[in-house]
Image (cartoon, rainbow, N blue to C red):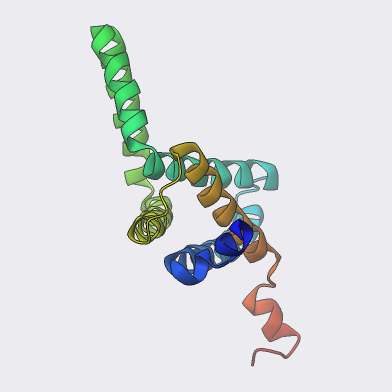
Length: 165
């Protein structure tokens, strides 16, 4: 009976399906972007996908466990002024790099919005698992969608073989 309720979860919380759809689109978009970067800037596939998956996992953790993370960062920053300065500097530099590359920031904002909406929808129906389980659930939905999006043929490839116009 518990398995049945888990299988009905996307129907009760439809924003999980939206999150999965966003992941599919992002996976396909990143595949096209990687092809472009491989040709123009000689970026390796391993480096590109490592950065993208790390970015997705960081967004899921930040959006799912903000209370735990902020508590730990606050305790760390309260322990020493030097650590406080280093953490603040690291955050400012990291956010500054993202702001300089607005196309990366757009992907992060899209994924973060979808994760937060899915989390809100799960809370609306009363499904509030522990934070670590929620991270695993949302990460698996996102990574599964990105993998499927990566496997979908590129639109220009479909146009080349005559299926898309």
